[in-house]
Amino acid sequence: MATAPVPDPARTVNVGRRVFLGMVGLGALGVAFGAAVQGKVGQALGSGVGSLLPGGDQFTIYSVSGSFPTVAPHAYRLHVTGLVDRPLTLTLADLQALPATRLVRTFQCVTGWRVPGVHWEGARLRDVLDAAGVQPAGRALLFESFDRVDTESLTLAQARLDDVLVAYRMLDAPLTVEHGGPVRLYVAPMFGYKSLKWLSAIRVVETVVPGYWEENGYPVNGWLDGSTAPTVPPGS
Image 1 (spheres, rainbow, N blue to C red):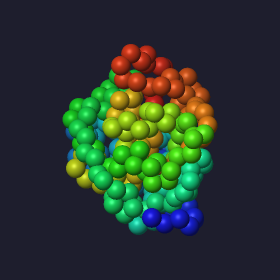
Image 2: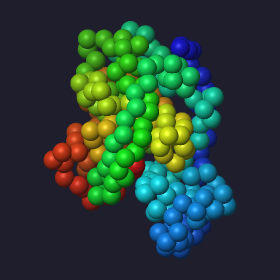
Image 3: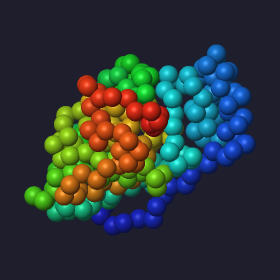
């Protein structure tokens, strides 16, 4: 496991106004023809853009920043800092060297759409935290994204659940940029907005710091059972 900080490896693929307006017109094609049309659109307009259309893998893809940060797998670094004994900078290989957990779960968006039977694979978040050594004052986690906008939060108890992953595979393949790759947070028992994409940093803190969607009216505890859908669509 590396410990020295490295330059931010992310670059972004912007979704400009002209491209966005073009995709509005192509939306009906995405519904009618699904993945085949999306693949062609993605090739023509750039990484990630095609998956903004409905129908691809049954997911609806959102970006709160208007861009998709692209991080090469070999350049990926996850910084684990805050109230820990051993601040870490983890590569993708470091995460893959931890015990792998595989889950098959329904991905549920708080706005109502869902995708059943999604395969996930990654390291349990608690194993990452154990490697860093959480100090007694640490009671919550703050997560940051390479998009430089989105953030999320969990309590330490939530983070240590068996089905909370630092995920690097999805649908039996490496995570794509559109789905938050090369590494994202996956919180299986909560709505999709809690599963932060393009995970860049984990900070152990004393108390919960509401994330991007919580600051915009979403429940801090986004449990699938008993939560109420808000009015603004969250990221998947």
